[in-house]
Image (cartoon, rainbow, N blue to C red; front, side, top):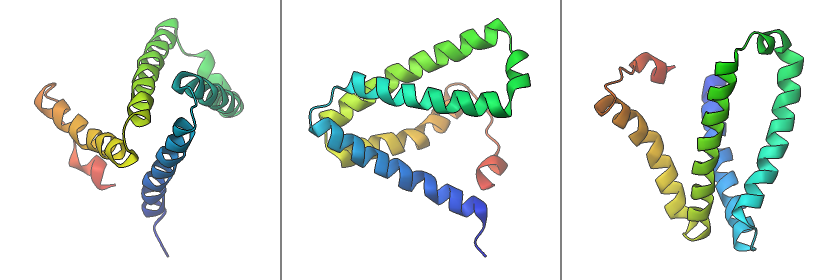
Length: 127
């Protein structure tokens, strides 16, 4: 029997590659990247809000205003990065975009170790 962790780890890059492929098709058809993101974020927020309200309603009530502010700013900067990434995908080949995005997964922890002097436990990556 195949390990569930192995399946989940392989589903993620496959779904990410499909997302990049379909995003490139939509952008090459002339879709505005900001409108494209706004629609995707709206649907995602609706789905995640309903899921969170059903599963973790009591935990939401315990969050402070500072946590909500932090979540807002994190989402705002993530959104800016996503818009910039979609403009990059619009004006480049899908393979170049995929290489840049996948490389950021490798270089972000390395920069965190070198610049921020973060300790990353290898056990986390082994699981």
